[in-house]
Length: 244
Image (tube, rainbow, N blue to C red; front, side):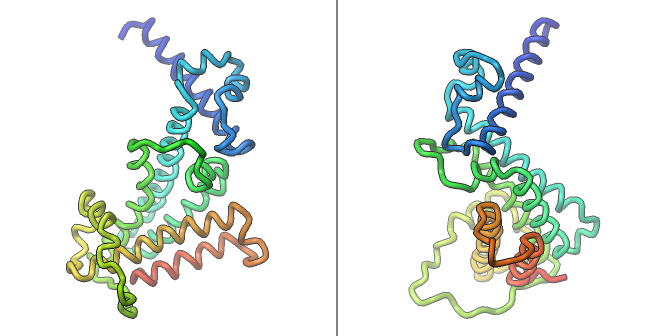
């Protein structure tokens, strides 16, 4: 690459970063549904037509924001898990991951609203957002798999309700198999679907709890949302057989 082309590439990268930063600030003040390229263009002191050279539509900008935010959140979860030096202490890894996810979401409420809030009217996220969006759950499932490889098992619970669909978690089972997330868990074919059910419940309960906190629905119910999430994490972990 010639020096001139390198300079152009660096300039484009810098302007793209400025546009994304402005858009992320707009998420916090205006919300995802109100995000507009015109407003972002004003923030970065560019004409709208110039911004379209970097992001051809609002949907393209939303997609870039989604991928970036999911990747940041996923990195926070992965780093928290990797930061637990005793890899056999799956309870510590589980709690550290929950705490890191909460810390990122509380620090980025605008981005959280884009990822887990009300869908933006008229926008459908493309397939290339799926892999970044699953980074957190992959961390959680790996921890579960490591716990079971070491001999942990979930407590016995009542059988599934009569008429329950045995294939209801088939897509999740296929995803786990595709990514090899529980290949060493030593679970039987009969045990795995129940474990996946519980892991899915833990994942959805994590973000449901955070949604209640960030959208103000825990006010008047708990005094300390941070401590409350710790309780949620520990109980969900115990339901999966992950104990200190």
